[in-house]
Image (tube, rainbow, N blue to C red; front, side, top):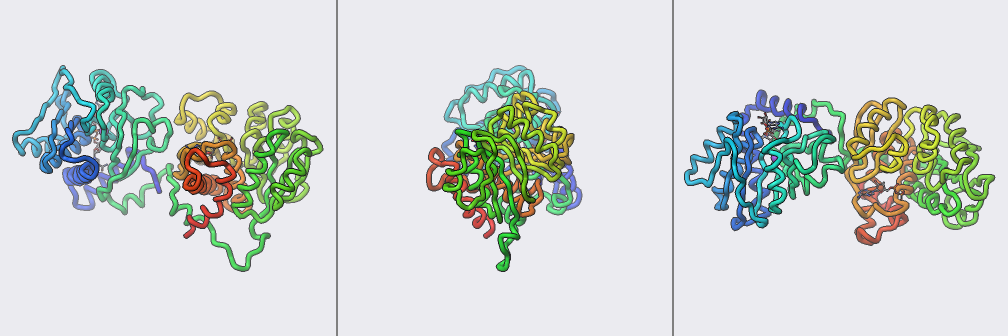
Length: 503
Ligand SMILES: NC(=O)C1=CN([C@@H]2O[C@H](COP(=O)(O)OP(=O)(O)OC[C@H]3O[C@@H](n4cnc5c(N)ncnc54)[C@H](O)[C@@H]3O)[C@@H](O)[C@H]2O)[C@@H](O)CC1
Ligand SMILES: Nc1ncnc2c1ncn2[C@@H]1O[C@H](COP(=O)(O)OP(=O)(O)O)[C@@H](O)[C@H]1O
Ligand SMILES: [K+]
């Protein structure tokens, strides 16, 4: 699914108005009807409703919602902010239709004003600013937004929480944004919805259809994508009845050190459950016996060193090579990573301590083969590319670094974000807090390694891998609950996850 920018949504809206015989006021009515329906399905008429409208079409939507709720017997009080004397045409139209009802509790704010008391049990409909916000809020709007947040009332934001920019918010101060309980987006989710920093503003979010042009939606190109179950289904390949393990590739995983051999095991389990044809593990000598008994399906090649990885020699050809889980960052390991990456020709999968080793010797970055996949969590990302104070900043740096080094960067978390060298950004929507468990990332590395070995392109392997991994985590949470999931539970559900996704 494509995620559009504000400008793109505006042109799809314009196209719909110009080519599909709909007026702007009709779109406002459609939006308001869908929002009213959603509100009525959640709150009864006894709820005290405050509708806060701004000067643009977000305000127009809000005023139309106020009218519809009044018609449905709700007790509604309306505040329209018209401090610059510049209401949009849609807003003027919605105000007229609202006031035509007669006997409406309506206040138009044109200058200084004392905010009314809003009780904690009230419902606030936030239509102050939507996608037309040009810069973070300041002055009176900023104070009023803060005041609404402090009221503790339940807040429903129309389209986007007021004060939140639809795409980038690195410069937005948190206090100056509505903290909604529910955000009802019109027609499309916004880029900002997929960035972890903004979760506290959005609350639950839902997209409401107002039937903007499907044709123009199809024709509009985007650089942001959301990978959902159907997309994953489309890319997953069915297996031929006549296939053999030779058809599913061979993978090499370089992982583990004394005390962290579990990482190698979990990674291996992730790969084996993802259908790899042949798996070899390169581990420190001390792990030989345990690995052979715990993961009998894999072949084991031991390092000459007992406790850590000091040499990475590929004795055969592999379709995918992954480095990192539990490898540690001993000097000898850093040197082994450096030598190996230097001579590698095909894309690699670099995770965890492989990334920490590179952070110790950043010149390795220049030698990473093109289209390699790096899978850092926030801490590993910052060690590699410098401190960042939010996910959005990391995503922006990832875009820059992915292009510069010609690599794919997968940033872990809810909406795991895959950044491609061409600037495209893919968000994976599966998973949840059950995945926040030790070793979960090692399993992900195994999944991606197996998909690479099976011939999926690196960007697809990364995004699909993240989706399958998250989905398997959701399945594990059904059995063990969000608190009780172990990384091995995730690994053991990967096969079921793939089956579910494909059917
Ligand atoms: N996408 C669509 O097809 C539809 C969108 N609709 C609604 O229209 C909204 C967009 O309407 P608008 O473009 O009028 O935008 P807004 O309603 O967000 O408001 C824009 C107004 O706010 C002012 N403004 C911007 N930044 C400001 C700041 N920092 N401080 C003070 N004033 C500021 C602008 O000068 C402009 O007058 C959407 O969010 C949605 O709610 C609906 O009306 C139906 C159709
Ligand atoms: N709240 C969450 N929602 C979705 N996925 C999550 C969440 N928390 C963690 N994950 C996923 O779990 C994995 C954790 O990886 P990582 O931090 O490397 O763990 P470890 O180092 O213990 O293996 C990543 O794939 C990440 O995307
Ligand atoms: K809003």
